[in-house]
Length: 609
Image 1: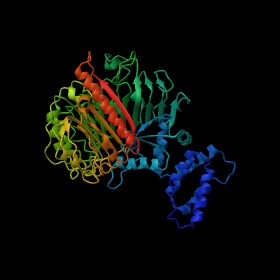
Image 2: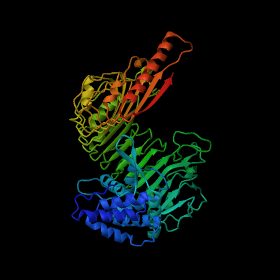
Image 3: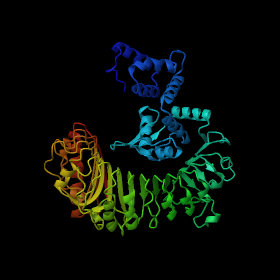
C-alpha cells in the first residue's frame, strides 16, 4: 500500500477509518485499489473524505466494475488539463500494445499538448506528464530488467475503455479496427489499428479534410493515403505496418507508395513511418515502398519530428537541413553525406547511420541535443570517432551517446576466434558532460579512455564498450561511478580484476556483463547491489576457474554464462581436455550458486564451433 498517514493532522484512528472504508469499497479489485491509492497519495489526508463522497461510494448497490470506472473517471478529472489530453491521446493505440515512451512523447509535442516551461525543453515537460500518468496508475510502466529504465507503457483494458468512452463523447479520437465500426466522416483524429487498408476500403474513402492526426498501427497497406486529401494534418504516423503488393522496381510515379504533395501539408508537425518487415523478404510483401522522400519536405517549416528509422529509405534530400523547428530526426538510410545540420539548432534527438566529417563539424551548433545515436561503417570509423567525440564534448545537455560500428563480417560471440578489427583512435581530450547517463561505444578502443571517469561523467548510469584490454586500475576507476547501474565490457585480449577494491565501489550496479574476461574476482564490500551477472567466455579460458567469489554479492539473483567451445571429428587429447574444462566450469558455477545465500538462478549455455 503506497499511502502514508504518519504526517496527517487528523487523529490517527480517523485516518485509518477513512482509508479502510475506501479499501472496502474497492471490492478487492487490484486496478481500483492501485488507482485510488495513487490518487490519494497526491492529496492531504484531510481531502480523503471528500474524494470518497465525490466518487459516489455512498451507493451500496455499486457493482465492482462500476466502482472501478468511477475511480478511474474521478482520477481522470483530477488530472491537470494537458496531462488529461495526453491520456486521451492513448486511445489511438490498440489493446495490449506496447507504446514506446519516446515516440509517444514526441507525438504529444506535435499535437500541442506539451508547452515549454522555464528552463525545461518540450520533451522534458512531456516526460513529466508521462511519469504523472504512471504515478496515478493511469498507465502501466514497462521497464527493462535491471536497467531502472521505463522505456514503454501499456494501458489497462478498463482504462482504455474509459478513454474510448470519453473520446467518443468529446469527439477527440475516432478509432477504427476489426472490432469497431467504420470511422466517422467528421473525425479530427483518425486511428486505424489491425486493418487492411485498401484503395476501395471504408477507411480510404473517409473524408480527410478536417483530420489533424492520421495514425495507423499494425496495419497492412496496399496503398498510402493520398496526401492531397489532407488540409489540417499535424501528425502522420504509420507504426509497425506492412506494405504489400508492390515491387521495388516500380517507378515512383506508378507506385501506390509515395509522398507526393508532402509539401502541401503546411501544418505537419510529425512524420513517422516504421515497417515491421524491414530486413525480411516474404512473397507478396516487399520492403518499404516509399521510394523517395521528396525535396519539398524542406517546405514543412513547422515539422518537429521526422522518424524514418525503420523504413529502408536510402536517402534524405538536402532540403531537410532547412527544417529549423525539427526536434527529433531518426533516419536509418545510408546516404547522409550532403545533409547540412548547422541550421537544425532545435534538435534534441538525432539518430543517423552514415555521415561525413563535414556533417560532424556541424554538431557543435546543436546545443539542445539530449540523445545522439550514430552508426559507422568499418572503413570510416577510425577517423570519424575521434572527430565525433571532439565535436560533442561541449554539448552540455547530452544524456545519451550511442556509437555503433557495422563490420563487414558479422562478429561471432567468441571474439577470440574472430579476426580482430583495427582499434579506433581514441579521443584524448576532455569530455565533461555532467548530464550524460548512457554511453555505448560498439567499436574497438585500445583501452579505457581517459575521459571515462567519475569526474568528467558524474551521472553516468549505463556504460557499454569494447576494449582491447582492461587493467586492474580501470576497474577501480569504474568503481567510483556512484550512479552506474549497468556495465557491459567486450574484451579482445584480457581483463584483470583487482585483488582489492575500495569499500563501496560500484554502489548502484545492478547488471554486469563481461565477454572474454579473465577469472572474475568479486571482493567483499564492492558491487553490493549487483543482481545479475552475465559472462561469455571461450572454453579454453575456463580451465581451473573458481566462481566462489560470487558469494560476496549479497543481492545476486541471476547468473547467465555462455561458454564457447569446439568439437573435433575424433576424440583427441585437445577435445578430451576441452570436455574436462567444460565439466569443471559447470561444476564450479553450480557449486557457487548452491552455496550462495540467495540461491540465484543459473542459466548455462554452451556453443560448439
